[in-house]
Length: 210
Image (cartoon, rainbow, N blue to C red):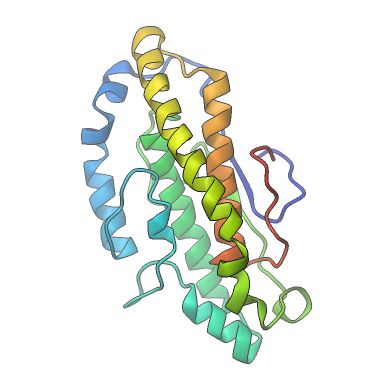
C-alpha cells in the first residue's frame, strides 16, 4: 500500500501484465453473481461504483453501521470494535467489486481475501481522537467533497470506457487512466471514512494521490 499521511489509506496493485480480454469484454455479465451477493449483504441495490449505496444506515444487521456508530460516539463515547470491523470488511469487499467493474483487475472479487485491493484505517481511540459532536455535522461538512466527487465519478466512468477499449486491443490498462480511477476511489473512501464510518475527525484532503 502506498504510504499516506491520512488515516484512511487505499491503493490498488497495478496489473503489470496482460489482462484477460474475454473477461473484460463480458465484465458486467460476469459480475452479476457477486453483485447479487453484495446486494444481499448491503441491503440494497448496488450499481457500478456503488458509492451512494455505501451511505445508507444499517438495517437488520446489513449495510454500513453508520447511524448506530454515530449515536454511540455521541452519547457513550464508544465505537464497538465489531461494528468497526464490519464496516472495514464490508468496504473492502465493495471496493474489490468496484475495482473489478472498473477493469483494474481480472481476478474475480473475493468475499474475504484482500487480492489486489488494499484499504485500511485504524481503530479510533474515541475519547482521545473523536469529538462527541462531530458525527452530527460531518456529513454536512463533507458537502464540498460530494460536489467534486460527482464530477470525478463521471470522469472515472469515461476513463473506464476508454480503458475497456485499450484492454480489448492491447491487453493492458493504460497506467495514467489506472492511476486516475484509483485516485477517485481513494478520494471516495476517505470521505466515507470521515463522514460515515466515522473513524477520523481529520478532514479529507482534496487530492487523488496518497
